[in-house]
Length: 594
Image 1 (cartoon, helix red, strand yellow):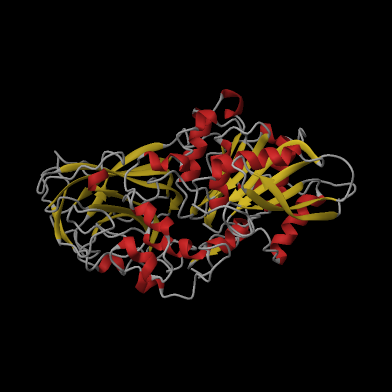
Image 2 (tube, rainbow, N blue to C red):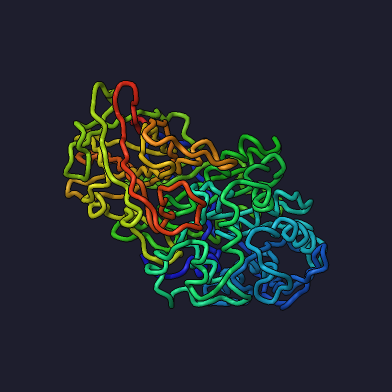
């Protein structure tokens, strides 16, 4: 993984993609995938720019934007980008993207969000993006060069800002291309606290200009306690960071930052884009499902989902870490985005509405494939049960995984020590949290339970949502359980696919906290998000169970005390049960072979 910050990738938002192609196939047919080509433009438009244009928000605050438009008479649709990453970052890559859209007959409006760059007001992440987004869309629609059709384009924070604006129902918002969309509060960070690594992002966007996010020793800073003063330890006190920790439950304070409870209000065609190793992947399939099931009927069919073999900074390279996905892994974004916007902002009948709604890259050799729905209708959700003789500790233990239900088996036991947390393998930069890393070093620990199938006799495609049901008891009044899905190669390389965490006090949701009774067995549901991988013949399917994934998530002190405001912790003895009365298991989305 590189140390390039997440924001650098997000400022160059041109790496979002467009879905299209042939009818669904039950087997990979990459040669039949039809990717959009650059539209023919008889007379490409030249660019003219209007810098530092003032947009007056409803409360009187001025937000500033740069406007790039065709140097020609007439009215043009608008692509609006609202970002905290400074509107004037005109790298060659970024300027090439802008020129491409303008050449194809679009106005690009690049705006500094409230409190960032040259815009007025105070920056409180996410809280004002809904109303400000509405007002910005309507400003774009009212300009003398505007056709009245406005699209929003963005990745990561910019995508979140677009969703919050869409939930406000601006009348002239006609389409969106959103990539790597963050979810509502506590979907990605189920511990009730921000991910420790996000302090780097809050440092990066402190003040009005971008700060150097790589100069500090973040790996060391993440260890600081309590989390409440982590901003001070980084030498940049930040009230926005403290506000997150002051609200560990889903209370009214979070409502302005929520959109996934408002799909019924969003009347916009959306192209949803992410990558299997995007550390905010969970938002994109949830948004696609929400918009195809809960949005107004007239836009349910106008949703498209595309997921590639990419990290958060998607579609940049064909390789993540040591895993190479092949030359087709990177595609032409710009043509894809224009293809989408031409349909919904210009009204061109270019075939978008007849294309299959889902395009996915099947990792492990499957390649690109078109589908008709997500999750795939033909999926066989298959239960794989945890087994052992009571000694599944580490990869050298006796843990097994099979489709046979357990009988009379002893529990597995390990110690969760907050002073020595189990790591999630990652570079310390917030730019990418985890990837297809080799987990053999982690699996050597005694506080990691490892359950593996025998070598597979045939290829097994696992493609869709992954969920673990865990029966567990702890000596602590509050603790965490982590589950991770691994593809083990014959040479031993243990490739992380996806994982998830549950905090005991939030086992029933984040609206309220409920501590557990030490020693009592509870049933926990762990959402491990989604993956799409062909587990090849000779490989093994593996599940890891442990109690931390640091620094991707804060370490539970196991005390039941106030979250993020305590120092130290206590060791907890964890029992994982897998018997006939407590069938701990993972449900895998197995796609049958044709």
